[in-house]
Each structure stands twice: as C-alpha cells, then as structure tokens.
Image 1 (cartoon, one colour):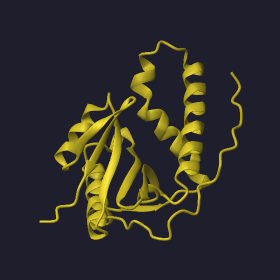
Image 2 (cartoon, rainbow, N blue to C red; image 1 turned 120 degrees about the horizontal axis):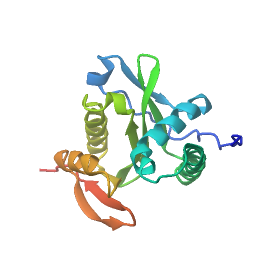
Image 3 (cartoon, rainbow, N blue to C red; image 1 turned 45 degrees about the horizontal axis):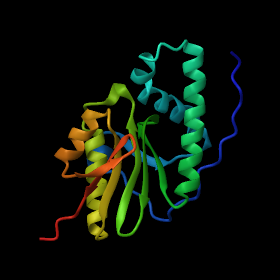
Image 4 (cartoon, one colour; image 1 turned 45 degrees about the vertical axis):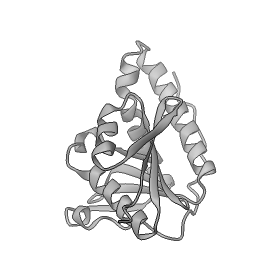
Length: 185
C-alpha cells in the first residue's frame, strides 16, 4: 500500500515562557527543546509505539496498522496544535537523539499536561517522573495546579500519577481525568 503524503500543520509559536530542563535530567545529558517540523517523523514513530500493543491485538495486517497509525497521528497532531495554540510542544533529547515528548499548556488556574510519552527503551529510568515533578514544581511557583488525562488501559501511568500526588476527578470517555493541587499549607 503506497504511503500518502500528509501535510500537517506547523507547531504554533506557543508560549513565550519555556519549561527548563530539570537539572537532574540536564546533568545526565537530557534537554528539552521546542518541537519543529523536523521532529514529525520521530513523533509519528513515538505515537505508533504508544499504540503498538493495542494494535497488535487487532489482527489487522501490518500495512493497515501503519496506515491507521499515520492517520491517527495526523488527526491528533492537528487537534493538539489547533486546540492548544499557546502550549509548549517540547521534545526530550538524550544528547542529540529524540527520546520523548511533553506537551504542556500553562492555563490559569491550572497547567494541563496535554501529552507525555517516552520511547519504550528509556522507560523505568525515572525520566517521566522527573518531568512531571518539574511541571508540578513550576506550576506550584505560579500558584497553579496540574491537570491531565490518562487512558483507562494505561494502569502503569495511572499508578505513577497517583504516586506523584494526582487524584482522579472523573472519567471522560476512554480517559481518567486527574488533578494535582499545590500544597498551600
């Protein structure tokens, strides 16, 4: 099946502020930078990896899975950049290699983690926790809470968010809505 070229919208200029790389990650060779058009192939691959187990169980032929993932990535990307024009679309680099993404919208009174994803091969290194804790600390300095949504099937992420002080606030479709409030004691 030939691949159809998809023109995706550019990442918006976004926020004038920039989430700094957490020092613990920076000291280990990681850096956050704004995403650009050159990151689309990596982001498409990362998206496909996040859905691989789900689609492996589908029984679909590989070509159909690839087409579906390309279309779903395009839809998600288009939605995110249009819906969250003031957000920070960040790529996590290990040295110079892209290994993850963090999409963050600094809304008032809450920050919204639109999406966070890491390559499978770098899971269990504490990178996701470090990024989320850094978002929490940055939000707390601004007097804000943090919201996010987690897929109902993603129990590992759900447990991580609970450990990091998030609480479930409801079910929205196929996702749990979660919130973290800064301690004001």
